Length: 311
Image (cartoon, rainbow, N blue to C red; front, top):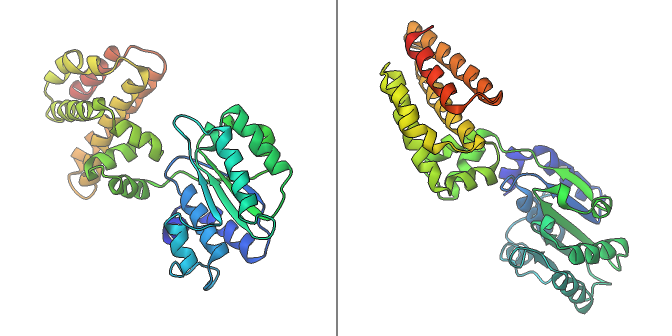
């Protein structure tokens, strides 16, 4: 966990470590960033650090009874709230408050996290706000969200906000593979987006596998200067690209093929590398035309003719 945070979120990780070390922790934090970038990992690290009985060099040991119970979600001073269905409800916040009182909130440090804090309904948000405004004891609260704009400004004003940067490409690929996505698909998804959540969403769409196969075939036609690439636009691609976002994704998928080809040519055929670079430039211009609302079919047909005829 600490290795992942140090490699992928060095700024917020270092900030929290220093705050703990110097006794300057805020009582409430808002961790905001894409899903999968380390928000919950840092929440767990902080909980372990605060309750660990064998801290070494400002790091939890991950072996003492407290660390093990936190990792298992069984520590009596650690509370984790998640959406109940589509939202976090007021009863969940009230139950948290009652549990705090019952467990001796006044005398012992308590730690709670709210995952997907943006999914609190209005009543739950107002109940939490009152709780943060009138803290009755010692606690650290972590609100985790990938949509900070959906959280009440009054709640945000009572939290220290920490921004988690998107994962770098290599880390994102590793995270996607860890989630059960094949390496080839994970590599492609990381080229399409630097958001773990968005990558997972795309991977779960039936459209993704069909589009991936279609673009691979289109690339082969283009690489072989086969005019079937022109026919293929209307025959296959337009049906896959009804929405603007999917049109952009198809061109981005094609770009990934050309970039992979370029990486293989860097120490090889100079003429082939020059031609690959020209085609990437053509593709970049096609993406600009699509952004300027030229029809997807026209953009793709022009792209084919420019790549194959070298106008």
